[in-house]
Length: 430
Image 1: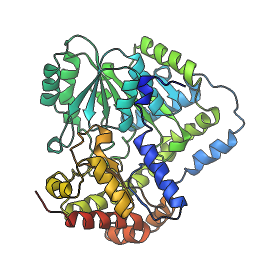
Image 2: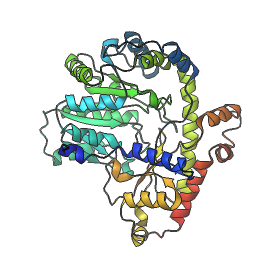
Image 3: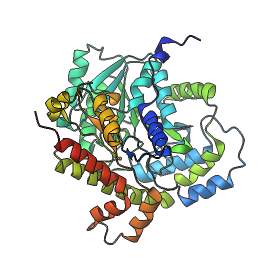
Image 4: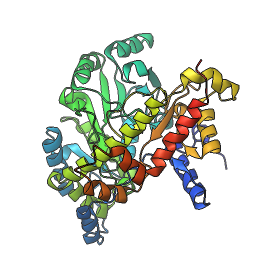
């Protein structure tokens, strides 16, 4: 059977493939330190669990756009939490935000402006949609964020028609870098976005996992007419396997809504009915915000611990502002790594896995150059239920003894840092 050329060039998602490999190794009895997959480990909130059980008999096809009660609840949530006003007819539901992002890439006219680094699936989705991609190359010097001058220079170098529509895909807090935009940084981008007819797909699925004094602001606050927000419950509510995503469309864009619903009706018909009913509970802010905030405090503690250990080991890394990822690099060790026949981030990730059983993801998977020796590290390799329970028991003393707490209840994370420190100390600086 012959396969279309686009698909033959496509590989399985690097994040999913790495996770499956780690599961296989662990099933074989190997000890693996897993920094290669970002799945929030905390348990399902009891109200969501109960609602799912109660609605297990909802076997009907739901409306493609999503059940009305849920869409109303999502509007209430965004108003209370983000101070954003949406009506239920502006809300679309899907089995995962990944599906919605792909549909938007397919439906919206224009080339895709994609920051580098960015989440692994964006570029592959664009290739599947035969969409022209223009990479916006960022660097640690700007915390891997797009700046107005850099965006203008990229547009000028590409000789793009100012009036023609373009798409920009922003994810913040960002997977893989853990970086995010301040209110002022977003405001500074808006005039350029408007002047150059750039529509933004704003992937804000990590928005509530913001920390280190960073407050999340949606671009939709300052550019409501040109911002499409995608989100869901997989990260801040630890419900990745529920496969639930949400899209919020600017008012007056019936053509966009109609297009997305038409595509959805031909592909997934509707999101799971029992899941939709259960997720109503997940969007009740009075029940969920406290839970999300506690889980976020744990993410902050764990990710800051890893960052501190990387910093002490003299591994270059930008400090995190949210999510549960770090994006260190070993570019100042290139000569030493070259002598070990490690020339790319693929080589580096493979070496750590084969030598130390430490799983990570190479920066090239996120759009970095092959020669850039960066890795994406996730900071969630621990028993979420155990850690959550023990964290609640030790709230009064946790800030003073966070390292001791992590050593006791997240030993894999500590061991991973030990490995990275040992490996790096064996290298010479260039």
